[in-house]
Image 1 (cartoon, rainbow, N blue to C red):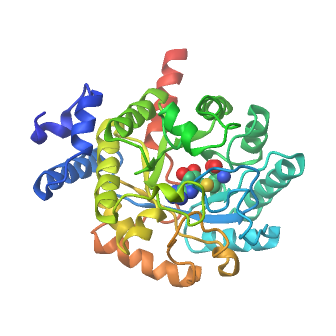
Image 2 (image 1 turned 30 degrees about the horizontal axis):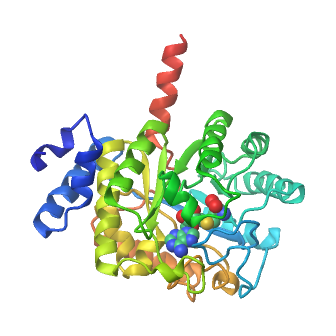
Length: 368
Ligand code: SAH
């Protein structure tokens, strides 16, 4: 493969992608990084979009083998934020020009939870409208697999983007890291239901899982493309001590970081106009991980707005950064970090996926 022609490359094969993901030499990785950066600027522009994330509850009905807030972890203080606490974080976000929020929690499918989220969405929409944000803050939900009807209700109530990682597209690996009641098929069906309900759909995987190969990650990227998703959020797999998967260890940090950055860059090259997040887990590996992720083709990042008192109870993995910082402190720190890599934040904007807009106008044109 000609590394100098990456930014125009069309017909991607699993072999091409595997080759790029496996690059370790500094010079070759710099060629890859630059190509991803050029495609980013050409397809979606250099702006970075914020999604203030509120981790509103760590109560979870699932038992994912890798996750620190899995049901079976008895060592976690379980919490659910009051609506007023959530609203105050979300309003702070709107007032500070963060045009969008992510509401994330452990997974629950009971009626009370579904109704609660619905009411919360309606209130957030009502209470964050302003001159700068006439339609209120943009809301992304990240609360797992639900029925199509639930997804529709929440869409009606005001959420318009949804993140649901497939975690891996490899059926055997998926089975090895989840209890038997979960399946990749159900995850993929849920992604289809989200799409039907009208959301901008985001998915992603963990990078560096025990037993995961570059060829599997290459198929992950091709799966994102085939599903025609609008947004990608992926990050390194980091051990959660005491979890069932912990005994299988994790990749060495420097190698993992390189692989995660390669994964972002190649996803940008293959998918081109989707939103890609530089996730918090990158920063858990190294303090400048998130901004370095931006230089490999990411254009979204998620400042943490969870109230400080409960942050340490939402530890999905070891070494999650900023658990002692307040959102005020994070604000200046993060902006400085983003500017240090010569990028800037688009404030007071939803920052929707360009891919979604193109997909919509393509569908409209076909219907005429
Ligand atoms: N329950 C929701 C959201 C919470 S978990 C859902 O399932 O969508 C959000 C993401 O955290 C998961 O999709 C997973 O990819 C990631 N995560 C969980 N444990 C992790 C670990 N040990 N290392 C890295 N990422 C992890």
